[in-house]
Length: 82
Image (cartoon, rainbow, N blue to C red; front, side, top):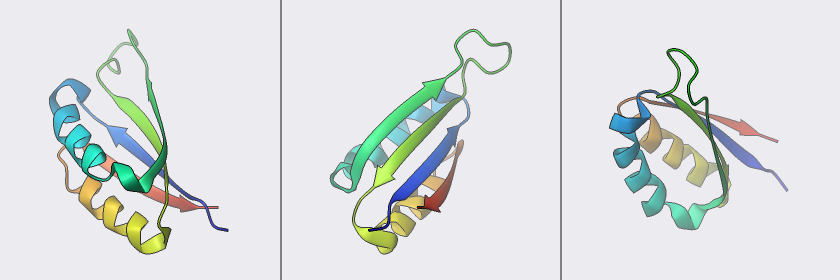
């Protein structure tokens, strides 16, 4: 069994989060786990964040989601297979 983990870097969360949230909600049936991290109050980084996803549905599903998320302004996503 392969495990698809996706890491997302979100710049300017307050501006870019609504579009990201729409994409994550639309693909929610393919997301088994979601963890959100941010550094509140850290100089220059309080508005940025990191999200970890475990994606179900295999490599094709994960790659499709990866392309969609990388198309959102302020989001950089990378995929790791374990």
